[in-house]
Amino acid sequence: MRLAEPYTIAYETIETAPNVFLKATTDNGLTGWGCAAPDLEVTGETAEMVVRTYNDTIEPFLHGQDPFRYALLLQELRNFIPQAHSALAMVDMLLYDLMAQQAREPLYKLLGGFRTSIPTSITIGILPVENTVERAGEYIGKGFRILKLKGGAGLEEDVEKVMRVREKVGKDIEIRFDANQGYSVEEAIAFIQRTTSARVELLEQPTNRHNEELLKEVAANVPIPVMADESLMTLKDVFHLTRHGCIDMINIKLMKVGGIMEAMHINSVAKADNVEAMVGCMDESALGIAAGLHFALARPNIIYADLDGHFDLVDDPFVGMVRLEEGVLYPMEGPGLGVKG
Ligand code: MG
Image (cartoon, rainbow, N blue to C red; front, side, top):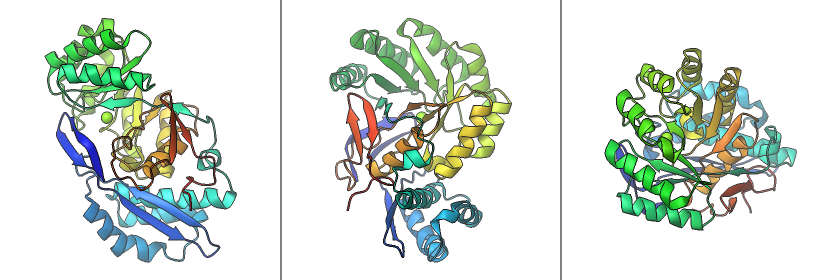
């Protein structure tokens, strides 16, 4: 799918969002859907790799299996293809879609149904200051109440941006900031100190993913929550990050962790340490966003959503699978993920 305009973060600029869609029918006539949004930098896969994994491993393995044995199926698949994060997420999503359809309930209810809707942030990629401020105004005009600003490529400009955006949007809008590993510890602390009056709500992944000591140092020295995103890929990661007191919050993306079942495990470990979670996304079709949303609605300690990856897609075949009203996301109330027809 094409993006309406190119999107820049600290380490890359992208213009298209390659997703892989999986459809399966059961012998009792249900049709389930899954979606992979591979990203070489984050999930370590390309769309071609996902398709190859499907042809070589997933299809031969999944054919004829019972979706309700999902713990077995996903465990075995993970043993075959441990690095295929988004391909695993695609299969997991499809199995959950089928189970919820069989239960004749929307997926978020099958998963726990803690909420029925959740506000989402809307992300502004790295743009010049003036454009960022203008874009912030446009999004607020469209009803969004939470902005996520991307930065980490230049401290001075980041500080100016946050201050100017706060001035533009007034005091009632939340501003979150994602440095995508772009800062040193000193820069991260300086950023928070210099933007104190702008009341940034949380700081996402300020430092390099490969050294969680850096995250810990930032978290110990700033008064706002520090969130792990790129540092959290696996269940082991969340255990390590919480056990060592490195972070205050986590960003769970189905594509990173390999789907809803693993996301539930990760969320439980976070919960054990009173760490709250946000559900984030890649550049995903509304199908993938719907799966993230159903998961986000399911559990008490998932308090934030950053499910905006589908807004900018030009030719998404699943457009309309989540409903946005005044910055709040609602799922389809039909069975499963809610794919029609
Ligand atoms: Mg992030």
